[in-house]
Amino acid sequence: MAPAYGSYSDGWSADWEHWDMLLSIYWTSPQYLMLPQIEMVVNLLFGIPGETRPIVYREDCFVFTMVDRPSEFYLLQWEGPNLSKIRNAATESSVVELLSDTDDLDLEVLEVSEEGAVALQRIMDRDSTVIPELEKFLGYVPQHTELSEERPDIYQEELEKMTEDERIAETQRLMQALEERSPEFKAASEAWDKGMEETNISPDQVDPEVLERHLEDLGLKGQLGELEKMVDNVTEELDQLEALQLKGLENRSLILISRFSWTKKMTTMCGLAYRSKMIRSRKRAGSMDLELGL
Image (cartoon, rainbow, N blue to C red; front, side):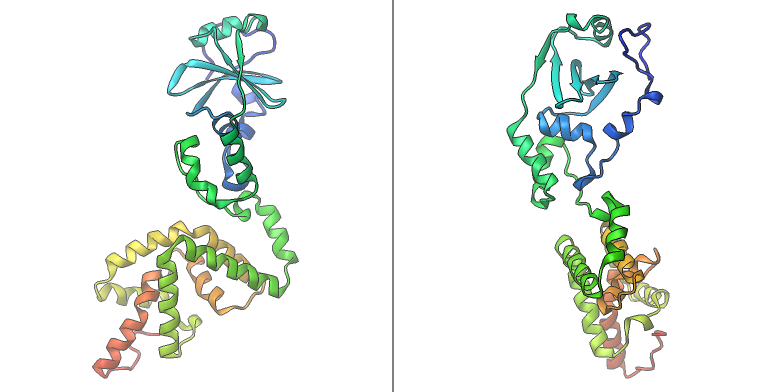
């Protein structure tokens, strides 16, 4: 990865395997949304758009350029953090030459972006309403994250300490989050409840594979695929619900949802939504002998 510009002076290096800050700066962070620290500092705090590429580093700072603007170079110092633009360098080789004596660097100290700083604070406050506003800073819309993704060790500790009532409250919170993020989930969940009321069959009596085969026989394979994609988008919440169940929580809604997470070839939302339809069709045909295997 190091450019072939000869040796570096004054403690500078491009030996990335030995830079202990590389992962902590460029890998996902343990904060809400799990944005890399480099994005939080450069794109948000200082409001500079674009993806960064590191050039060289030193113990107290590093130099980077922008992927889509390779003639721009910046010096980021950990303390502060402070970010400066190197005004008298237009190529990587000229940057390396200037670093032989940092006094030769013509630095423009950049001011913090007030708007970006506010957005960053909202992330720290776990304000999910900031998510759509981040596209103008990052160039993409980040995905909502949960504590179990950011700090799985802490989340598991919290589960251990929860009382039964607290687990039920956490289940309800996750169910609400699922419904807010996926209207299809809410509709399918309501259809399932209605079907259970009509047939008096409990969730643990459902055979997912048999139900899925009959859904395909009824020509519902397309809807099945669409809703499987929807389930993939809320996998994290499903995993959290399953974790709650494993801690001993007995809750009908939780049993329903956790069935989805303990097998990838599960009864999908489409299966749940159309289950009552199949039962009613059998009733009209006068053949309620439960050939479905339910």
